[in-house]
Amino acid sequence: MLRKSLILTALTALGLMAGPVLAEPVNTTDQSQWFSITIPEIVIPGIRTIPGRTIGPKVMPWMNPELGDAWRQGYQGQGTTITVIDNFRGERMRGDFGLGARSQTHGGWTRNQAALIAPRATIRTHDFSNTRAVRLQSRRLNVLNLSYGMFAQTGYQDSQIGWGAREGSIISYAKGGEAVVVKSAGNDAVAVGAATRYGDQDYLASGLIGARSAIFAGALDRNGTVDDKATIASYSNFAGEDARVQDQFLMVGVRSDLTGLYGTSFAAPVVSGYAAVLGSKFIGSSPETISNRLLETARTDTINGYDRAVHGRGEASIARALAPASIR
Image (cartoon, rainbow, N blue to C red; front, side):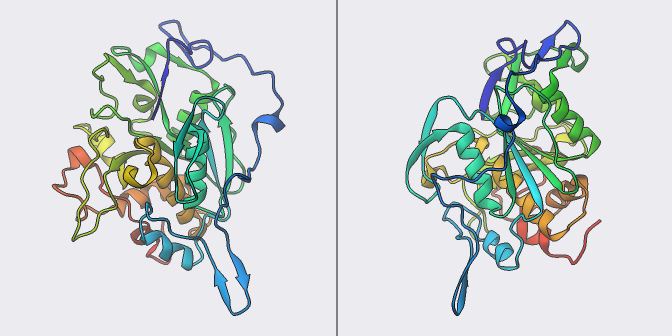
């Protein structure tokens, strides 16, 4: 998960102990900041037909095999939008999602991962340089992926933080149930919203605690099964004693050994993709309904030593979430 300092970004993100601060708009056009993307440097698995057979998306070794069943049923994220808020212009990192090793920005990786999980979803990007409010698309399920945190010295109250337009809009959408907001849990091996060993805390996480359609995504060391249970990754933040966080906390396998990419940054896009896949079956369901469905159908029997204060609801199961004919 990317750590962004609130102190260094106060003019573009928020003000502390000084009342609300509105970020100045970036001098760019909407066209340059908002677009439905294709990814030329990799092939996003889609569906194509060859006489006599149909070829669909490929389940990569780092994915949960349940995803293949969802795709074969025709649920691939169509009719939904995933907006990835991240850094698309900064330092590059090396990894491999099974399409060949390459170097990309942090945002490039999280964007591509979400697209691989939900190959027919519309993927939009919102770069950190754009401090304006995140925009939602009308008449479809919106999913926001946040593989980053906003950090400052611990000890501030919510009332002392004046969020800028970008994070303010995200928190508002989550509290109002207007979008599924998936937030990486963090990589400090502490409870969500707690102080880290650096004496700071993630105030974006704190702002999403209790929000109607927000999910915190933690990392397991593998995709668990009943016979081969997963363990929480050593770096992953956990749910903690707050019952509200426990209700919002979901875990997925992050196969760093296969991809070379570590952190809960790469748990969040999996959950975001699952939300889009689920939304492509239950068309018209609210973001809150989709979020709750993912949380309520999580598995606890695939996790070694399951503990609600550690693992929250458990390991996400797209198969269980898709099982009924309808949800409400």
